Image 1 (tube, rainbow, N blue to C red):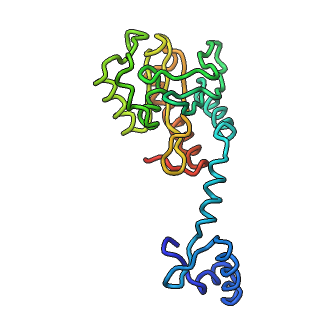
Image 2: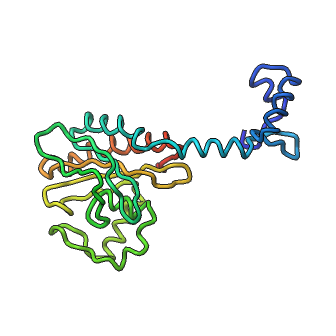
Image 3: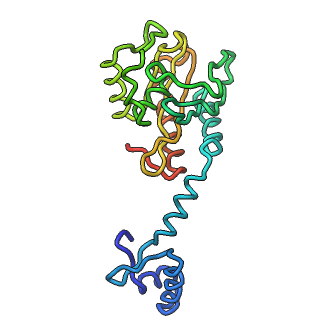
Length: 231
């Protein structure tokens, strides 16, 4: 319970008599697994919270994400990617290519371009990397690349509000992409899931159709890492 629980309440919950529950709580209290409050009720102790945090931080996001990537490819038919924050950029650490004959541009170790990729926009919106980007030149990779600082700021704000980003022919003219954040406990950005495909296939209508699968995958991975995406 948020305000703790008493001995009798806990005894009923674990189906033992109050004296046994009291002895168990005494042992847990000495190990700092529970903490006795001023009103005599018990709540989780700091040591138990620390153990939980250590367990969560030790989870390998790539290991957890691998089956999610495979599922995304099966559901959407597009290449699914996983990127993680690396300094001011997001770095591709895993991907599962689409089965279609078109060759994917996904590459392990490839950094995002903040203003020209869906993954990069998520990094700017959720990774705390927007500050300090203002002095960087916004290179026009294609005719569709966002190159104005005000326009980029507005787009990043929109990504933050809706919880996902897209890039439509902005880094490569024939490539479209979607991306969504993976958040751990405390809202920390620990990963970015993406879908990418040729512009002729990943059209506006198709992006709308596959967006739900991407957002669901990102939410499930966030929950597995102890976080929760805001709906």
